[in-house]
Image (tube, rainbow, N blue to C red; front, top):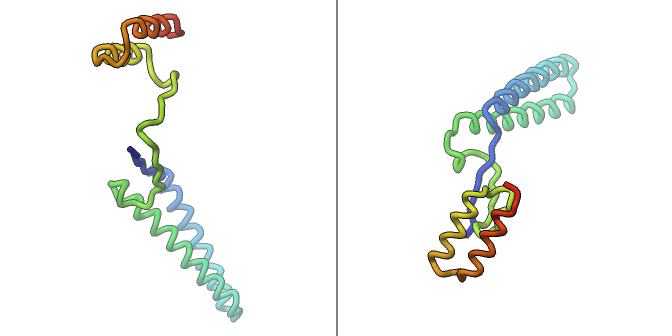
Length: 126
């Protein structure tokens, strides 16, 4: 079974991005006005594209900032399987023993296997 997680920037990161976007937009408008006085057609075209992209990126930042649900926001989706084994560092002593006890109660391991594994858990660093 595959699980999905959505990763999107934090609110402070989005606010900083919006501040940068406002600065880039001001930069584009300023240089567009300078180029308009000089009559540079190529420069005006470039600055028009510049402003369009800045507004597009800013729109994505605003959209991510106002959406509460990660499924509807523009976020990176990562998938992972449920069957991936947990690393020993991620599980604690108590949960290992509880899991082992459940395996024994469900008759999925024999009594000697249970005792051997329990001894290993007790001898491990915890």
